Length: 428
Ligand SMILES: Cc1ncc(COP(=O)(O)O)c(C=O)c1O
Image (cartoon, rainbow, N blue to C red; front, side, top):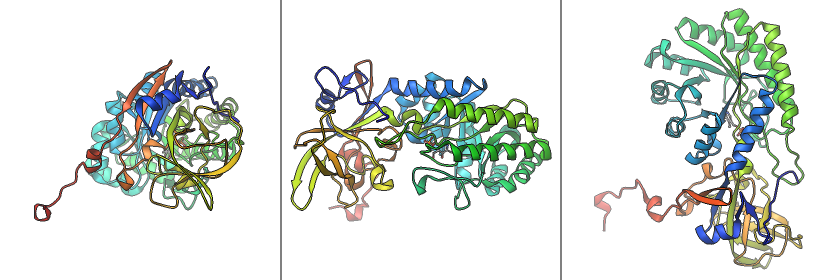
């Protein structure tokens, strides 16, 4: 297995030096436990892998993976920038202490109001259509804004069809053959061109499609420079770096991956005489994915036509298994090393048949009251959670050096009802 399951002297699951059993007793469940050190180490590993080969590296953490303010503070301290995809994410990033110039806004199908918000915030605006370019020009002074364009390099990859964001079926980006035209148009309109961008998908463990996208983007950058006479301050390859979820999957060899990309990058810079632009990447999952564990209690064992363990979390808490069919490794928190003795379905508490965390999963004996730990719940986990079935959202704690701190309170029914109005005529 290519991810760590740590136990303490009591034989219980340990997270950031804390005992999972004690955390559940203290804070209740479902509970997201975020390991601060893991986030810091993940950031440092990816930064050092790339910066060893090319000094001018910038990481824009893709905060859609996990927008918890404490997580964002940790990454700001580490020196990260932010990839934001909405005004809400820009707002959150500014609140978390990121400087506007360290935030790149990559919207999709954006409104004029959103563009105005981004322009007024002073962030880099990464556009992905001619329409957005023209609308931005109507609402702001091009001189005052730094822009880049998201290019669709006609290659995509990802752990699920829904996570592939490049290629001819994708709604994202400017097709590479239109790239020179849109850059020239932007220069004619008076914009400061900051860079060029692509993002081909999420959950990539095979470097090959990523390398292809790097190659294509560099060729496009070369054409923009040579045909359009445009200098680029940065070249951004987006995110997508995967992590192992199943016991069979292997970790990405980040050292090798970084070396291959930076070698290709440097060759292409020379080939097209592009100077030394900042190389950017936008990892989300790689930074936070394995840093959180979701703790949830078994409330029902149902042994009839099938065997089910029913838990106090559902797809409202962690959507990935229902949405993508994603595997998340699950252990029993007071015996994480126990041998599997059965196969069982692990089902959530939402009134939908699709609310399953695992089907026919080999597991040790499980009884009512047991605490389960769902691994790799740091990316696209809480940030995709909802209040479906009028269930308040889970609590989040940050753990570090054996200490835990609440970084998001558990919601209450009042939160579920927030912002609702009942017209007076309907009141009883
Ligand atoms: C523009 C952009 N950059 C970066 C990312 C981060 O992807 P990942 O979490 O797979 O690294 C995404 C995710 O969808 C994205 O849309």
